[in-house]
Amino acid sequence: ITPQNTKRESFLVYSENEGVSWKMDKYDSMNIFHISFADKNVGFAAGAFTNNETILRTEDGGKSWKPFNLTSKGISKASSIQFTNATVGVIDNQWKTIDKGQTWTAIRGLETYENLHFVNVKDGYAFGSGEISKLSKKSDMLQVYASVSLTKDGDVTWYNNDKISM
Picture: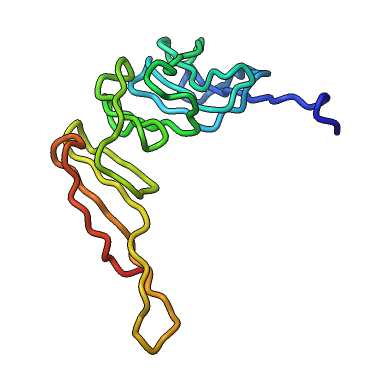
């Protein structure tokens, strides 16, 4: 297959009757990596587009999708989007919304983490890699620690524990 003959294709598969039957929309210009809904109507799809758009948004429960441009916020690529409750959503563990995606702000105060989860607008957890150190001065074996961070104020302040033995 030559590069000029390849084309990106993705499908959004959805049900309007609680899974009894399914419909499919085809998108020729993107690869969809992740879909998440803030409520039954408002949802987002993140992926790689050939026209540099990286996010789709629906306001009708997925019946129609439109490009959602956040480049003015500095969001030029998005491979994941996750809503953990009705209002809090996260893009690529770097950007957060507390109003179903109307506004987005950068996550503050975290350096290394791989997964971010907000329980509500104020309480959130970040999980990732912590420190690596030798088991002893005589040993070449390394001890790896996990890192868990907690915020109780909506990501203004993070409390870190990077010494959880794995």
